[in-house]
Image (tube, rainbow, N blue to C red; front, side, top):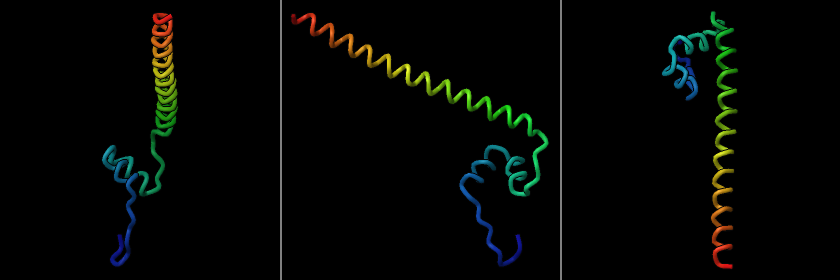
Length: 80
């Protein structure tokens, strides 16, 4: 950094630095990483995992809705 010149460091850069100092260095210098293919595969894996988490969350909420509906139906049939 030159004297009198300010460098802006964003929160995402701090996060990158805390996770991996080398990744932060690559990002700051603009040099391509040597493990580009692994990064692409890792991104795909994270995307697929995110889809699985989303689907499982939706199924859990659907399960709660069915449980609530079953309880309501049981209460209604009990009082008939």
